Image 1 (cartoon, protein in one colour):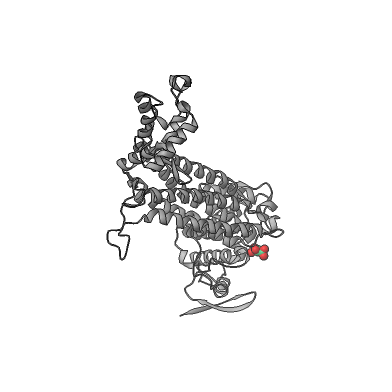
Image 2: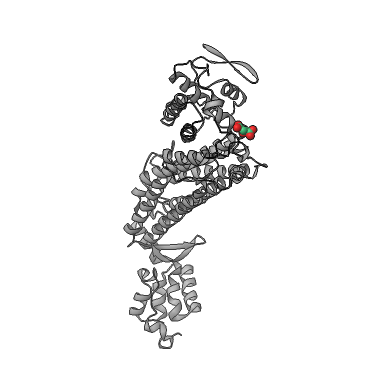
Length: 476
Ligand SMILES: O=C(O)C[C@H](O)C(=O)O
């Protein structure tokens, strides 16, 4: 492999001749051969936006040469388009507050700008990674800014798919309105309800969890860009931070504000912990719902078999004709990963010391991965599973008619004790509640039909005349 030699404060080192990154990135590649995973594309896009915003602010303030600034801006724009993604070669697991990722960005922009201004890769005669690309900046302010912006940008992809999932559950709620089933609590027969009510509630849970992610992500908009080292703003123009963040808001299309306390913006990663925990809570809800789907779709012959999930692939390598609930299984596993990521984020967030939290690379990796895998999973889960769910009306009807808790509807008329006797007899004999209630003759046939109609039990109702005047009922 052809190489060029570069020099930094530690000495000389060979770098691949055609690399846009430089010597410090090459050192980091050797130091961190950990996972083989590279920076998230949205983090690259975000840091490129930060570099463009900074170069524009420094140009407006007449702090860097216009020719250099224009080349930096062009290189940063190319980076936002993904043109230099393959030059981000440092492992996601790296030490030191994201310095290596930051320097990787600085070196690529410097080399590309050097090329654009007529120089050669690795020369740094016209554009220098530290003196120009990093003018008035530090990893202390650039990395947290890029991480927060990347998270906001990536979340923009999650919201529409969550809306899609909630709408799909809402549509099933309407479609299944007329299907009566047995409710279950403690995994035992409970009173009848509508299958549509179950699905409408799933829609509500997804909507609330999404709202919470949106609310918790608001803290990400408060940025410390311009704080340079330690939040002091050393080596920056007094007007730089306002200009840089205004530029960044314009470039990214996000609402962003200058943090009113630069020290807070650097010490604390409450914003990352907040959004990560909201993603965990969303995951808890998706796991719960996907488990319910697996349960009520169990069967076809030996399970509950209330609903059918679309058949996506043969389920078994040995058992012919078996179809498995692959989408809910996938959904649960993705959510387990998000919960694990949140645990890593929690450890990283509490590990800040004094002026800085050096554990940011793991926060960025974990939160961005969580958002990406949730987005991709929710999309396929909705499209390939939820939208295609069908109901087994007869099976549900049978459960609605046979649940022992039908007896609950008798309470206001004959009292809990007598209703319990009927329920016990039904369990012991296998006969239905309605049959035994008829036999007991506490109520007229007309009353029994009305009171034990499962459809009447799914909403609150005004007490009937008979219920209001229990003396009219003959209790033996
Ligand atoms: O890279 C920098 O600008 C600063 C670094 O993160 C440090 O605080 O040592």
